[in-house]
Image 1: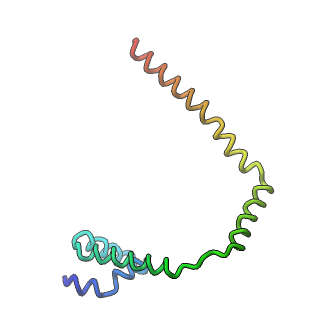
Image 2 (image 1 turned 180 degrees about the vertical axis):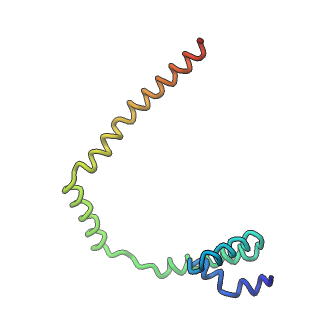
Length: 114
């Protein structure tokens, strides 16, 4: 197999973008394990695409952030029990862990004296 030809075929770019069929993706993964040049090229493609995404990323407008936070707060006000259930479980965790530790100590003591 001509590795340079495979690298320039465009399959690696399609793989990184998730645009390859499963069988071709498995082939790329297998070849990347066997050929360091393919693995390095995949890493380079990922880095270039990441830089491109960061350079072209759009900032979320502050109004949209405020709108999302407002919706979350409104949902919390509509359903206040949703939050209290999880905090109630957290309050029980410490006593349950203490009970677990005491039982564990008791079992170890029992087996060491028997």
